[in-house]
Picture 1 (tube, rainbow, N blue to C red):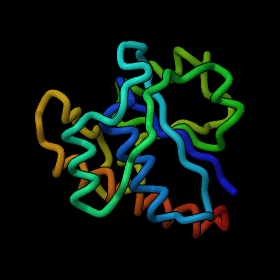
Picture 2 (picture 1 turned 45 degrees about the vertical axis):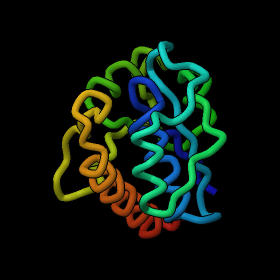
Picture 3 (picture 1 turned 180 degrees about the vertical axis):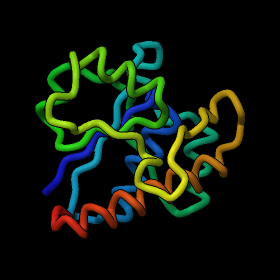
Picture 4 (picture 1 turned 30 degrees about the vertical axis):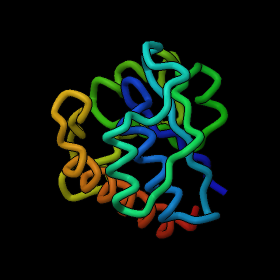
Length: 149
């Protein structure tokens, strides 16, 4: 079973959305979790508009509490997936590098690589849901092609 850590700035919008969307798509073939690169939201649940967006698509997200990524997460997970380049830079700072090539951006697994905007600022939760879903579909497809899911 592959273990994936989705990472964003606060772990209350994008990364938990990715965690729960991926869990729904992958079923028991993968272990998904999420974390933040900052400490400002530690302990908080999924941001209400993000939770409502997931719920509108039939995806529950109860029980989530934001946590900060640690250096040790690099050894615990097979892939560490950031939502934007800013997250990736902070992930590299936290872990001290990526010697095994485990870190990627979620949209790298789509035909439209790039950053997923932070809906906490834009309010565009449905658009972010679509981007994250596309990224998760691409990631799962790649893992299946590689025989890892």
